[in-house]
Length: 602
Image (tube, rainbow, N blue to C red; front, side, top):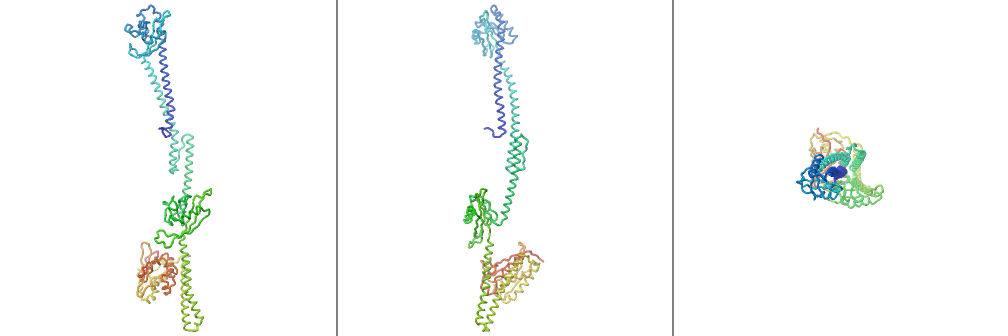
């Protein structure tokens, strides 16, 4: 198989381009030299045979066999070739190297037969006399225009082969040196061409891996230098563009992750493109698991799915409110998670819809505040309507003649006064609650480090008379070293409200324990008011601190409560930067805990 690397392709191509012509030329030259050398040897033998034949022809008619043999031997020593004179009957008349008497008849030799016919002949065959291959040249010798003998010259084939071998060796050496030079030159040329391309390959791999600091060297030929410069410039531009894209992506991710609104984007195939952290919390999903999945498969909510489809197909923004159960909620008696969905189609430059974007706002708090406001308006109206109705009824009774009866008039006026006092208490509590909220929002209240024990002692003294009336004992468990930052009058009002509630909802001859402890984990101080009263059912605990919320409305009104006491407690504690909590067991009592930060010991 042809090598795939450029270097080897170039190198092998150059070797073939040089090797094939050199091989052909070498073979042709060697063959031509061989033929030329053999031709020259034959011509030389013919020339010598002609020279010898001219001398032999002069003495043939009268010369004896010994004379011819002596002439052959004498001439053979001078020209170092073998000469043989053969008679027309095939008898050897003379030979430069052998004794004619010992030589067999040569009349059957092919070259002799051809020469006797008057045709010069060349033959290469094995010599039985010399036991080696010889090249023979036979020419007819004439006397009085008749063939009188055959002059034959010969030359050993091995001498021709030795001469050719020496020539072949020289040619082989020249060819080898030429091939070696061509191979080295081809290697250098191939390397000079492939090396810049190999460097560009390495550079491209580094660029593909994100290493744009790598620079290609421009030390090759002109085209490679230009390409290296272009690749370096491309890498620089890619680095700048990727840096810009990365920065924009990071900014987008930072914006999306910091948004309190949930954001979900889908493509034209209804597959999720992105989900921010707010949407993950709202729908209990994760970006890693949802990306690339169908919206219906990821959210499993038909209403959201239909809304996104409507946004994808609509040319105008769409909106919808959706109520869902809170994720992880076991009971779905009422939807507690209210979402407001805003959807819009995403378009490309050709105004073709390529996806849709949905922004989700959690309006649960707003809905809750609306419900609280509605309940508050209804409760205020109810709380005020009851005494006002009573006052109106008794005034009408007095107007109808009851005022003429002094005893009835005094009784009715007393009831009217009580109802007016009740209205006044409600208004005072509302004003107090409003003032606490307003002051804490506008400017923080002025907190001073004070003794917790002194505060609780003052609150207990305020409630002691009411507790004594029901034979309820008030107990205090507080280390004198506890101190906290507080606005003493406000916090005392909150503690008084808690103790007053504990007394109101406890049976006679019970006890109320006020204790203080330090929470080392949360770094705060906890003031607990624990009673042995009727307790609060579990379903009411979440709403116990709402305005006008009562567990037992009849008993609360009978005790003269306005329904605002615990709400006032909550806002006072919040103004101190703390929190209030409650635990209760129906029939065994309740414990209200006030958590205040910035604990300090004297």
